[in-house]
Image (cartoon, rainbow, N blue to C red; front, side, top):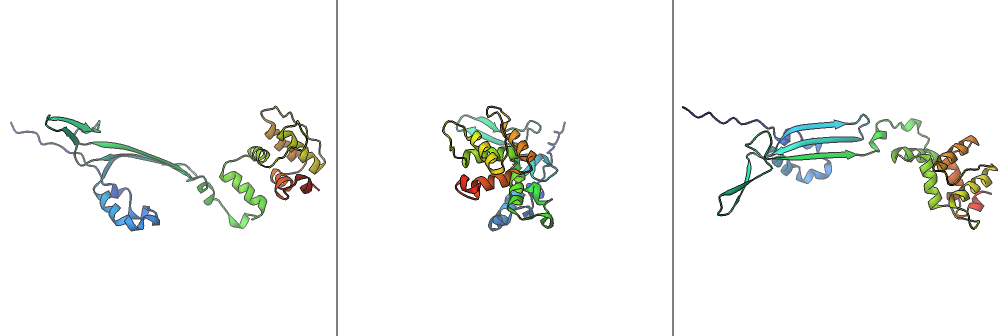
Length: 215
């Protein structure tokens, strides 16, 4: 009875998935060599997904060897199969996953220079969006970085509130022990018709001396 011929599965070359045009210009000096490598490397079970904004993507595939990789212990006749594939016993496969996220790509697609003010406030608002930082978080950062206590015994947060009240002649009062104190402060600043960034800029960036800046 004739032996049944072995059936081999087809696995595409990596060069069909990643072309030279996909590689960044910084890799121009090795593109030729990479193409030859990709021609000799195969893959299976490729999956990919990209978020709507294009700022992040996920890739998953198995790199496949042309034949199964067997490692023999010298003189023993004992073999170890390296990464045996769970579906195809004739190959070895190596799972690879890649995830990347570049937040600035969320804004490249939608950024309209004609509608951008190019003001300091405009760049500040853009930075908040790119780095996914809220106004409350920016106030907290300003507190730890710029606020200098002028009255012994008070906290930096209370000093910040005092500075804002002195600047605008307001009477903002917030429980400094509240977990939402910075969110409340953003609301209070908006209620007196002001904005967070001009407030911080005027108090702590326009002058190294908050008292000078508030005059």
